Length: 287
Length: 316
Image (cartoon, rainbow over all chains, first blue to last red; front, side, top):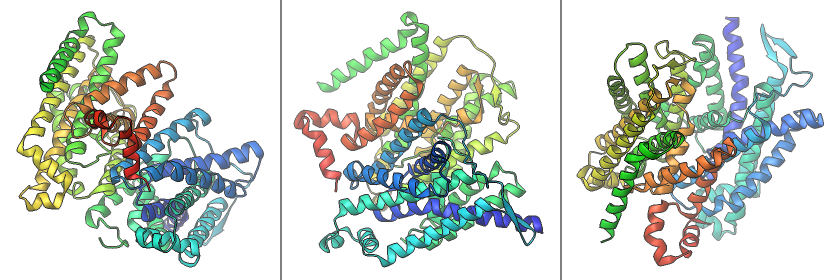
């Protein structure tokens, strides 16, 4: 019983981080109709920003998160402004393919720059934990979970309450009408993509603290983010939280009962199942 | 007139390629084998991605199934190579039907990522199979004779291209193109869309699987990560798209050109070659999204404006 409780707790903590990973992908997908296959590579880059800030400049990884956010925001903004805006009205396959190309480029540049070795961000308190009703809670995982939830909620408030957030949602709903109301799409698109990348950057920093990082982690993280976005739908960041928690719990349970190699099989199996049964997502809008 | 010139060029190219083992160096033949197999993959992707318009990011699964089918038949059951290839092809067909029926109902992004996820899942599944040697993989019997593998690969590419030629002019192919342009309209016009899509997926899979089988026996070693290499999808898609998806010779020309350049680059630094594919994808999507085949048709009218025109129609 206590083992199950521990596993469920692990799943929830992991799920919060997953939700943050998927949030940027869902935002970009919902607003720009681009499924960014380089999203996982952005997460990877964010992790390396925090890694080098920690090992090179000895900045605490949690304090380095804004830095990762800023770097990735600038990168995403420029990428959308000067490259992806050129193909935004092309057929879906073209935008999918170009982000696929960006993913390949980033992965191999990372391999050249950072080497293929696994890296872990290990601050002095990495091993600290405390007990909660008989289960062990690792401190960094709890922190990562809290930050992920806080950012997801902040994103929700930003999109629903602020002027810029409303402009972004208006662009997603109807580009022509948004333009008539004075929304400038080139800049709005770039800001949205930059935000998506920034969220990936934070998620990457947190991922680097709780797990291992190498240049090739991107593809499976992209697929997981996609799975969560599909399960949760693209309408609201709160759906993404549900999707992330669901996937985190399922992966933890699979690791316990079938073995850790099957965790990925389970998450992708769920993705395939969800798509087959309900192609618009469990909580998503109906087509 | 243009048609006969084209036929002549293809004929001469075929004669040169077929006789290459008698005059080319050993390393050139080895490069030839991998290029011909990649061209076969690009051409087989063309059937499902180019003609039917279903952008599969997981055709590496077929390649891996072909490799493992051949290897398991030869190593575990001591069957001849030909039977192994047949087993690999059969596995690909079974997989295409079992997975294709549900997955081909998905469109656009959903289909693409679903196939990508399947490619990831297969690595994990095969790593856990005892008959497939688990994580360590399998070692096949050694057969010296690059010339034989070269001619086999060339033969496979020719057969695949002939099948694509048939598709381009058959009722089946017109059905696929109708599905690509407008699936609902195709269904209304009496195309059995599910049957056509699954057939295209299976056909695409058979050739990829045979290519995988030939590669496995040639390399004599395989493990899950290299047999189900996700990077193969990058290569086959970009070769097909660069050459011209939905055209008969485009994917083959794209494969030869890109393989050649990437081989030249990889003699300098091996990661440069992989980087090169990424850059080609980005540049091609922006400037020539319909591939070399379309550039060849329209460049003469428009000149350099052709590339500017492509950007103008898709930018915001």
